[in-house]
Length: 85
Image 1 (tube, rainbow, N blue to C red):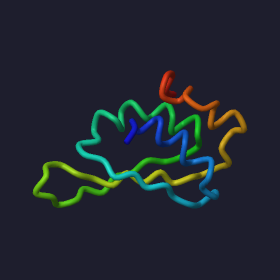
Image 2 (spheres, helix red, strand yellow):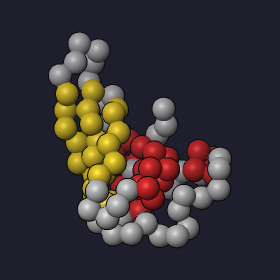
Image 3 (cartoon, rainbow, N blue to C red):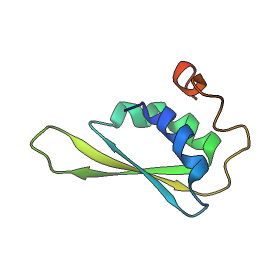
């Protein structure tokens, strides 16, 4: 669907503080590393749960919202894909 930093920017503004956004991903190790900056800017804590699958590595990435999202996010349509956080 989209890289984790883009998904975080597009979904977390709609999650209440204390709530969680969930993304279904394949092998998310590299994406988690790339998403650390976005998680910091968007005030979310990331955690993963590995899933058993015959299709290869799969996991759920939970983005727990700790504080309100800054008003600058999400940015205008198309910007998150062109310039990910």
